[in-house]
Length: 192
View 1: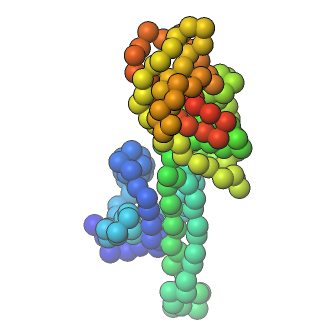
View 2 (view 1 turned 30 degrees about the vertical axis):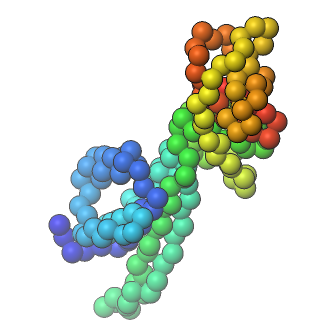
């Protein structure tokens, strides 16, 4: 490891897949890390290239969602009189991962990918959904395992909170006795 660095890349709210992606990008560019500091909810990487770190943070936002913020601070003055700055790039990963079921704009989405857009299956309508996340409120819905109470003429399940037999808003033919569901404002949806 070299001691020289231009930028601190602050990674927060990390998951293993994000750290693997960062390591892969560092290896592909043969980028040396000057220093690594573990933080309470992430790590700080001291890197020699501000341009590379900003590019990497933008890739992280596009691939995994989340936010990035760049700040600079005065570091000193060079021998030629040029003002020198050090940058800090903060990347905070999204709280949502593929496989989660979320409510966005009153739509119930089973996430397949999340970046600038939430992409997945619209559980209410049954088709694909792609929603721009900027400025949107996202609510993660909890999955419950429950009992199927009726298959014909419509699928009904035991409501996980009221213990009443309720119709599922996105019914599918199933031979299962137990299914996973989510509870939204409009009712109960299969989480499969």
